[in-house]
Picture 1 (spheres, helix red, strand yellow):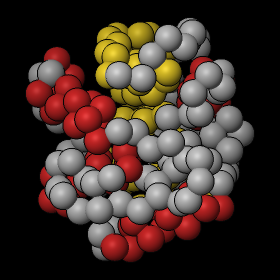
Picture 2 (tube, one colour):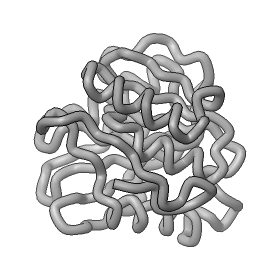
Picture 3 (cartoon, helix red, strand yellow):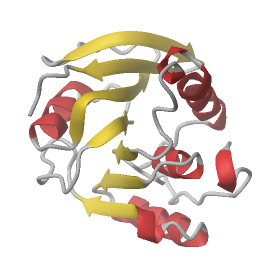
Picture 4 (spheres, helix red, strand yellow):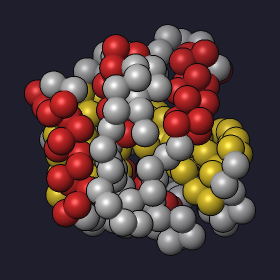
Length: 190
């Protein structure tokens, strides 16, 4: 697994042994960031450059690291698995991104209060776990998502998903076994 774009393009990322972590494929990550950089989301400028990103169910941190590689000012990583946290820390250290990263060893469906609100969020819960909707709602309630934040959820291609209150689905794409769902948070939150 490698960083697919930006200043760290081509750099290897490590993953913990076993099947506890299922990193987003390079192909799906490349497609996701192409959509964010060149699609309708980029009409008002990059949704990533200079912004704060959240990588929930972070695993190796590939999505948040990809955002940092492409110019995000900060990235928060929420993860509970010890092996994944160790791999995430190794990946950030190898890329010299520790100063731009906040690692939160917590459950994304019971997150602590956020130190800052993120304008883009990536959620990659275990497939068919039903955790994406509850995590989005919990992250919003805890202040992790800015008003009008863009959230991208990775699910199994045929997995059921309903946007929680306060979020509108705006697009979805299927890449092999993965489906990427793009949502926008309502803008009237304080």
